Image 1 (cartoon, rainbow, N blue to C red):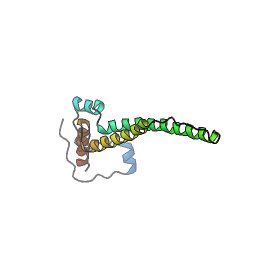
Image 2: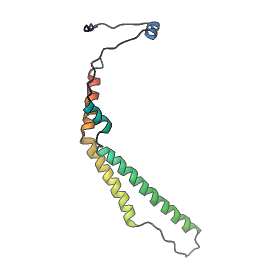
Image 3: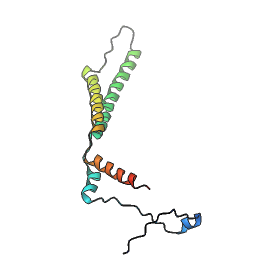
Image 4: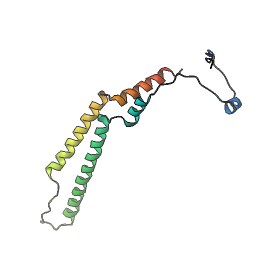
Length: 134
């Protein structure tokens, strides 16, 4: 198959030609082998992914603490004056939410600086297409 000609000038098509013609844009392709494809699909999760998982876990704990606080407030307002109402929140539950949020923040910051193979491959693909836009 002959090598396509290199076009050095813009090609201007009117609207009708653009709708009825097959247009082929020549651009260097990114050669993605099976190994790199598997990195994209099944790549190891990075620090940011773990950060997100811990964030959702701490949000769940925070919902539990909030619900216990709501139950306490309802019991407090419905109790007679002088009657003692106990809250069912332990200090370790509050500390665990704070620690989980702190770990989440640390993992997110580390994930911003440390790139795994999947992140490096995605960056390589982005650079390829950005350098060949014109």
